[in-house]
Image (cartoon, rainbow, N blue to C red; front, side, top):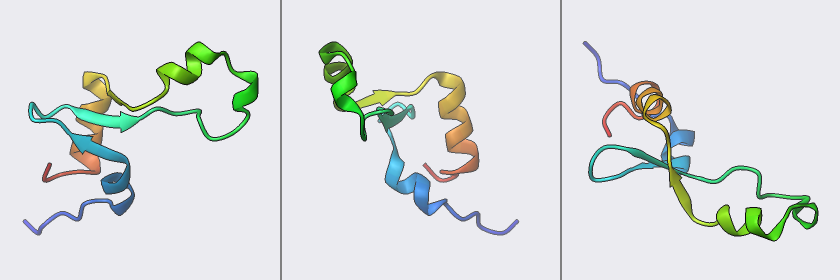
Length: 66
């Protein structure tokens, strides 16, 4: 079976933790932030661990060797 290519966009957007879970940045922080509550802006900082189902899909299709 041939080698699989890792999706270049996924390399820039996702990272795996030591336990194999997938981390990603928070969505919805690019513009129109003046309309958002301060609490939402604060909680959007940093990265979040994706749910198990989403992480499984990301690893399987986009990061096959992670």
